[in-house]
Amino acid sequence: MNLATLFQGFGTFFAQETDIVIARIVLIVLGILLVWAGQRGTLEPLIMIPMGFGMAAVNAGVLFFTDPTITGSDTGTLFVAPLVTETNALMNILQIDFLQPIYTLTFGNNLIACLVFMGIGIIADVGNVLRFPFTSMLIALCAELGSIVTFPIARAMGLNFGESASAAIVGGADGPMVLFTSLMLAPELFVPITIIAYLYLSLTYGGYPFLIRAMIPKEHRGIVVKLSKKTSTITSGEKVAFDIIGCTVLSLLFPVAAPLFMSFFLANAIKESGLVKYAKLIEDVFLYAATFFLGLMLGVLCEASTIMNPKVLILLILGLIALTVSAIGGICGGYLVYFINHKNFNPTVGIAGISCVPTTAKIAQHEVAAINKRSIILQFAMGANICGVITTAIITGIYVSVIPLM
Amino acid sequence: MGESISFAVQVYFLAIVVGCCIAALMTGLIAGIQRISAKKEAVTAVKEGEEA
Image (cartoon, rainbow over all chains, first blue to last red; front, side, top):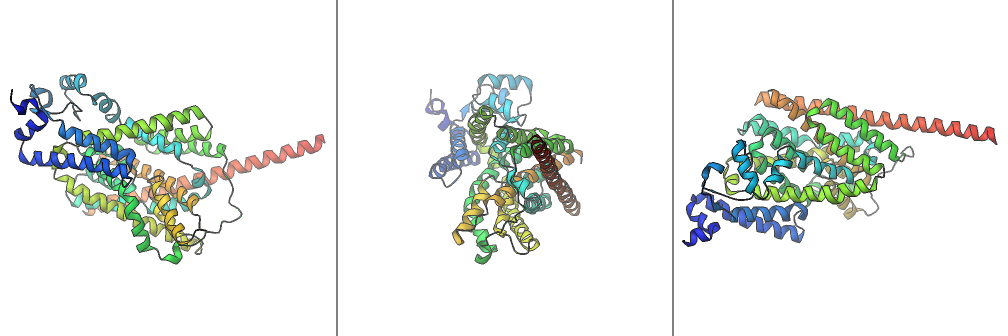
């Protein structure tokens, strides 16, 4: 027995093509860097630590297969074989691959996106949306600009309709929605698209404050919004009423995205109804288990061949365009409300129209507090933030409904 | 390219229409519920007044 057969992770370096080997090494290093950045808090640790572990382990743990007919290759891993469609191969893989059941039972049918969305629903407070519905909706719609503008750019760069829509929805800055759209419209590219989306979403903490400072002058960032006396408090009953009616209406409009709508609104209704045990189950178990497996699976699906796809570079550019244009649109939306409300509004709220709950709302409040500690905009920001989830779901629903018919 | 831009514009227009309808639904729903609650409270107050 030679060393290459004994230590197959290393051995496969000598059996594979040079570009694949380089890509594997890059991904191993990238995985380690993600864990490091997650541990330091530079990137979102909940996603990045499992993703980094997965990415490093799957690219290190490549072995020789004695029966290439199972995987179609003489090398592979025992983690997961994505998109296996041939029944015999699927049965073989199911029996041996350690993460295969998780992939088959949660990614193949979008359950993972629904579970994460349920988690967002349980932490979301729709009260702020109901208190300022038109303001929140206007900002959120403006902050969807990236999800729209990126589509024709992606088409011009050579992606097909499904791939273009999946790349464009990154502009909505909603991880589960990107996963859902790409699994529905571009399953062959869902790994790079979702990884790019989550990487960029982790970087919003660092990038968006600069954009806010560049686009909004200090005197506007420090504005204290005077609330009218008419502003009422929203009761739990009113929130639950909106949850069930909103869910029904949106499901009627976009049945293809109904599982997502139901997951979000159901979880929110559970919280507002005071079903403490269910709320704990969703928040402590579903959300964390789904986030953990999402990160880990994305990591292990990121094999060298994934980043060798020439479309990955295009996706990197498109993701950046989508999130930047959405942020600019959101801030323009903030200014629109500022002028509509006769300058009694802080335009910094606009950035929160990007539905990265609650990151962008926190960024907005942080930037405002740095100028004027008396200015509290979090309630407006959270309203725009939750509305952003709804508008991203609407655009996802339109893309997923219309594109397969084209 | 022109076809893609036209499609994207249509998607945005549709999203704006649906978004505005949802915002109107929220406003109407909250106003309706609060009006019903106010009426109920008024009826209860009248009943309590009569009993007293």
